[in-house]
Image (cartoon, rainbow, N blue to C red):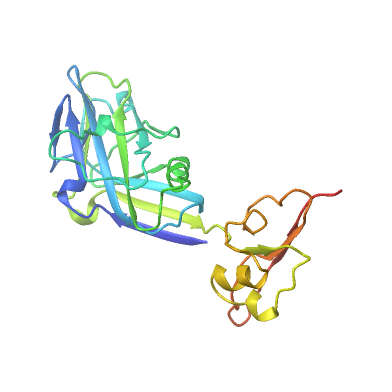
Length: 255
C-alpha cells in the first residue's frame, strides 16, 4: 500500500465558489443564501496515483471558518469531475455545477462546524471511479465539487480557502494499492530464466516468439486466458529486493 497526501490546494485559482451563475475565488461557501445555492469546487494537481490502482480510502478534508444559520440544515453532495485530467477552473464558463459528475458521490451533511476545526469526508468510491478511467494517469489533476442539495434558506458555511490560509486549504489524502503488473506466456513456449527477470515487455514477448505484445496469445496481468490455453506468469516481472518475493500465478480453463 501507499499513501498520496495529504496535499493541499496549490493556488488561488484551484478552489472556487459559485453562487448562481457567478464564480468567486478567495472564498468558499456551501449551503443556501436566501434562494441562491452555494457550490464549491476543488482542484488538486499532480495526483501521483497509478491508473487502475485499488483505492483503499480517500478523504477530502476542509477546515471550518464561519457558520451562518443552523449547521444541520446544510446539505450537499460531493462529486468528482469524471474526466481523465481535470482542467483549471476557467475565469468564465466553468463553474462547480458544470462538471461532468461521477456516478459515485458522498454526502456532505455536517453536524458541526466549529471555527478552525478540520472535517473530513470519505470520497473513496469517487476517487476509485476516476483512477479506473482508461485515460487516467499518475500525475494528472483531479477535481471535486460540493453541490448544494436541499439546504434551508440562509443556512450556509464557509471553509478556509487558499487565499485565507494555503496550509489550511482543502486537503486530499489517498491510500491505494497499485495494480499488479505482469507478463504471461503460453506454457508450450520455452522462456529462458533470464527473460522472466528482465524488466519491460520486450524481452519476454520476443522470447516466446510473438510478433507484437498485443498478439491474441500474449496477455498481461488480469487478462483472461485465450480459448482453452493456460497461461503462467509472474505477478511482478523484475528481480525482487533482498528478502522480497515474486508470486507465480496460474490461470486457465479445465477442458
